[in-house]
Length: 176
Image: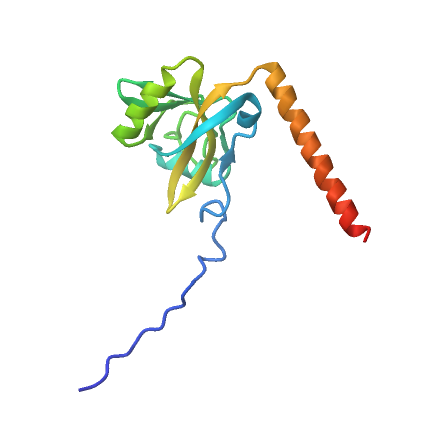
C-alpha cells in the first residue's frame, strides 16, 4: 500500500507580510487617548460593530475617530453615538454618513449587566479603542466615571513623579 504524502506546515506561519498591520489586527485602527484623561476607566468590554462595507474600508484606512463618542443602551440594545468614520475615498453615491448611530453587538447577559451599572449615578460607556480581530471590527468599551478637575491634576502629578523616578533610576544605572 503506497504511503500518503505528509504535508508539512510551519508552526508559527506569519500572516501575509504585505497586508496592512491595522487590517491584520497588529495595530489599533483608532484609540481614544482623551478617555483616560477625562474618566476613571473601571471595567472594559469587547463589542462587535454593525458596519456597512464602506465603513469597514474607511476604518481599515485609519479614518475613524472615537474622541467625542459614547455608548447608549436603549430598548435592550447597545448603540454607539458620535463615532466619526470618514467617508470612503473611493466610494460612490452609496457612501455612508460619517456620524451615523451604529449598533454594538454584545451578549444579552453583558447588556443586562451594563444596564444595571450605567443606571448608577455618574457611570457611562466610553469607547477606548477600535481594532480588527479575525477580520472583524471590534470596539473596546469602558465603564467610566467622570473625573473632576482636581482628579486630573492628581493624575498628572502622579505621572510626573513616576517619570522622574524612572529617569533617576536610569541615570544611576548608567553612572556605574
